[in-house]
Structure formats: C-alpha cells, structure tokens
Amino acid sequence: MSDGPATSERSTAQNQQPRRSLGQRHVARALWYVAAGKAELRPQSLPPLKPEEARVRTLYSGISRGTERLILEGRVPPLEYASMRAPLQEGNFPFPVKYGYCAVGMVEDGPDGIVGKTVFCLHPHQDLFNAPVSMLAVVPNGVPAKRATLAANMETALNALWDSGAGPGDIIVIVGAGIVGLLVAALAARLPGAEVTIVDVIETRAPLAAAMGASFNGPENAPLDADVVFHTSASGAGFNTAISCAGPEATVVEMSWYGATGITANLGGAFHSRRLKLISSQVGQVSPSRRPRWTYARRLAKALELLGDARFDALVETDISFNDLPAKLPAALTTQGASLPPVIAYKQTT
Image (cartoon, rainbow, N blue to C red; front, side):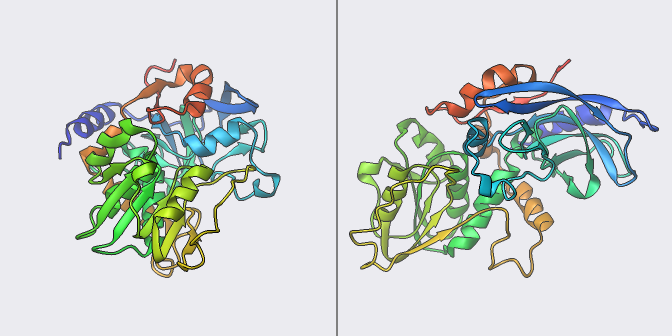
C-alpha cells in the first residue's frame, strides 16, 4: 500500500501556518439546494470560534448520489424531515437547505493539539467552517484526504455487514455496484472463505468489483442460493433480483432508501416458502449487535482506519471544482451511467 499522496497532502498542511482568529469573523461559501433541480453558492459569515470549536479549511467533500439526488429533486418525505437532517445542516426541507456529511479538511484554528491536522467531519459542502472539536475525526496517516471522503460510506458498509450476520465461508451477493455496494463487497471479501459476487447492469463496473475482491455478474446470471444478500441499487428491479438470489432462510439486507417513491416488491413466488429474512440497515444507529460497546466515534474511527487501502482510490478518481458545483452538481447527481459520483475539490476556490 502506497502512502505517497497522503504524505504529500500532510506536508502541505504542516507547512501552512495556522492563524488564530482572536475574535475575528470569517466569510465562507456554502452550497445550498434552493429549488427543484437548482443549487447555488452562498456567502456565509462565520462567528468567532468558541473554546470547544475549531475552524476547518475544506480540502474535499464527498457526494451521496442517492440521498442528495432526492434532496435536489425535493423528494424527501415530510414525515422524514427530522430523521433526514444532517448533523450540521442549515435550512429546512424541501428548500432552501444546506446539506452534506462527507467533508475533509485541515484545521486552521482551534485548541492546541488539533491545529494543522487533517480531519473528517459530518458537514455540508462549504469551503471554510466552524465545528465542535468533538465532531472532528483525525484522518489516520496513510489515508489521503480525498480517499477519506469515503468515511461515511464505509461506516454504512460496516454497519450493514454487522446487521447481516455474514460470516466465513458464506456465499454473499451485493446487488448494486455503487460506492456503498463496492465497499460492502470489499469488507465481505475479507471474510475467510467467503464467495462474494456483485450484481449490476453496468458491465463496466466489473473491474471495480474485481479490485474489491469480488466476482461480477449481470442480473441474468446472478448467483442463486446465497447465504446473505445486500441490496444497494435503489431500484425495484434490483430489490427483486436480491430476493431471487437468496437461498432458503437466507438474509436479505435492504440498504437503499427511496424517499417519497415506493417500489414494486416481488414477495410472492418462493419468498415465504424459503422463509427469507428481510431486514433494513441504516447508518443512523449503530447495529444492535455492536451498540452496547460501540459509540459513533469508535465506528467512525474504524471506518477511517479501514480506508488505509490504496484500492479505494479507484472509487474517488473523478473530482469537480467547488466553484463549478452549482452548474455541474445536478448532472452529477442524476446521471445514471458508468461513472461513480465525483468528489468535490476545494483547491483555489477564490
């Protein structure tokens, strides 16, 4: 595993001299979803730091294509407004709202010991922000800032693996080769003797599946009689493929979220005779099997540690400039093609 990119980023950060604000106010820019299909950058005045806060200069932030597409389209169900709020979100659904939860940056100001560190924070897309130090997770050495934007996705994948009960030797199928599905495959492939297959209609994802340690099949050749199946495609067709892959008394883990739109689920056929177990998995709560011992902070720290693998750079190859975000984000969220969602780069965002 090469840590060249991480070393370069950290050297740059260490050579920058952090500035103490001493009560000064700073002006930042943030992305706001303002209407269906429309987003814009808005200036935002940052208040002076509180003793328990730090100021972070963003390097990269990640996009959650499924969730942020629903937000862009105004399709968050009213009954889910509260549960859908991001930790440091501003505004309210449907619009205007400042959203996002995959920011990585360098601490410019704050308490001794954290200034100059590269950190991950559940913060919306914004070039400079204040946040409680308790919400900042230091990115480990060997994990480049760009790769660290996958931390929230890795938490989701880790939680789902816990929820599934998957174990050594299992036949494991993941339907959906998006970022979360690929990360689930990478974790599952580490189980001794596990046979892991990703199923997707986008055949060009096959090399990514192989890089994660998994086989790749189209839906027409999806494995049967799996012990555990994960569904991540956010489509009715994908869900029904996942059901068809499950063997007798197998577990199907539903990881997709559909917002205000339902799907047609095929629960006829052999669903009952096979006594399939259908469970949901969502990152907002630590899996019940770990909850007595694992805090959110411990889970996030483990997710960042798991990203110390250069193979995951293949999931963050493409980026777009923060300056170009309002113009390019709608297409990045709605495009259903071979490309994975881009990472937002904040370099030279003057």
